[in-house]
Amino acid sequence: MARKVKGIDMEISNLFFKLALILFATKIFGLLTRKFHLPQVVGAIAAGIILGPAILGVIVPSEIITIVAEIGVVLLMFTAGLETDFKQLQASLKATFIIAVLGIIIPIGGGFALAYCFGQDVLKSVFIGVILTATSVSITVETLHEMGKLKTRAGTAILGAAVIDDVLGIIILSVVMGTSDDGSVSIAEIGLMLLKIIGFFALALIFGVTVFKVFKYLIIKKGIKKRVYIFALVFCFFMAFLAEQFGIANIIGAYFAGLILCNIPSEEAIEEKSTILSYMFFSPIFFFSVGLMTTFEGLDKRLVLFAVLLLAVAILSKLAGCFLGAVLCKYTKKESLQIGVGMISRGEVAIIVATLGVNEGHMVPELFSSVIVVVIITTLITPLLLNLVFRKDEGDMNTDEVKPSTG
Image (tube, rainbow, N blue to C red; front, top):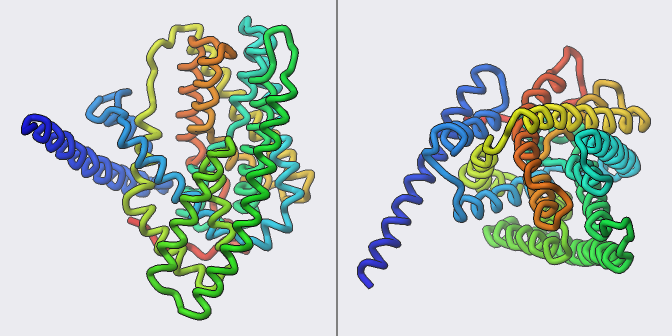
């Protein structure tokens, strides 16, 4: 018994050391990247790459780091929902839908064409295209928040389009997964997925109206007290849980929780507390874990070529689709470019879809490493490109108030 307890103590001790090292490394690397006028999130991801298996191997992926990182991305999206300009989001709903649709169609076409040229059959080629539809908005949210651009027209459009993107992506994925090798489609599976999505949004609306009224009553009658912050977190995690029960990403549930609370009285106080909780501990570990996933194992010359071409398709197709959609919806060319760049980043969603594809036989395992490379590089370059396209011009009035430095 003593040995067992001693082993647990040693494991906990190592965990504390790893957490200390991760937080220290993400902050130091973040400060270094800021010296070069780059978003600190780039430094946090770079820290994960350098200390992770890809280079030094000091820290390897573990279950506890994955769990903490998952909490980090949920809190990040909850905060993004709290910071959303709801009226602006309502006004741009039609536009964000068009942007999301074109940001899906073109990547699917590009991914299909590339995979088919590399000898994949039709179904497997379509699946590569489906992987490219995923958007990892968490990296974009952090970068825009850091630059004070989250509430711009482009920032709001990116958030709205990314949520719609994920929902449409789930529907398309269910269609592909329900298609057999002979091309027949399982209508039952597709219908079930559609019912689940409709069910989630119906429940989210019911809960949303009720919770909004409860919070409004508590704040007006009792004032903004500590219990309000706790209840806000309860609602955030419950909505994340509810989304997963309906087969939807937990970050969509968390974002909707923040969106529901973004118009209550004293919303800024909840946002401030949530931001502190997120940015002091959970979010740095999430961004570190993104770098920690980097691996270059199993890449031969042919797969390296496929990875390079897939990366080019991933960037250009998403940029072109979302840019075109934004232009058609009367955004300026500058805003359209910002929206297109903001949608480039792939992330955990693409990895999950790729893993599912390998397990179900819809993607050959050899291509998995190429997908990982695309996910990591698009994640790294998106903050860099956002920093360029959101660079403040003289006389530009379409920006948020600059937020204080987190350094």
